[in-house]
Image (cartoon, rainbow, N blue to C red):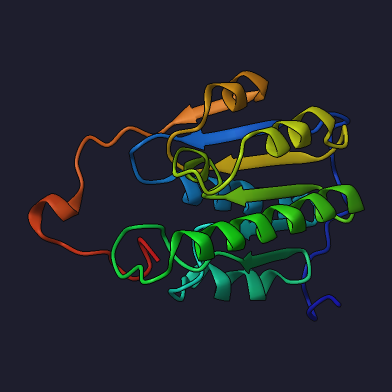
Length: 189
């Protein structure tokens, strides 16, 4: 349903979807993926972001996505970041949430409902031992030709990087936390 006065873009796509990886220790991986989602929606694409590590906090991008629905959906499927901040969940609980999110992602990738799917914070789950790499490599090797797939998170494995069309590494140079400034609303969440 289109809002009154809203401009409707016909779907504009290239014939080849890309595999894109945002990784590294610096800030901005999810933000870069959100920017790409915003651009894709402007071209008439349907975009789904599945959040693997997030889920315990409320992130403002959830409210933004509601404004762009049904063209942009964000589904937090994690139970929070593993072994940091206020994590009170067991490794088994985190692993089960990650495996459920991956099974859901596989289903949505196969559905052909979306033009872009973002697997937010998935990369760090491999190093943490919460997901095995092989099912994700299968996804990358067999994704639909016109689907763009975006994987974010620290420590992207070399085999993921090899299969990607575009890889950007975010490198931290300076961070407000070094001055004791905690995460800021509207900037970090």
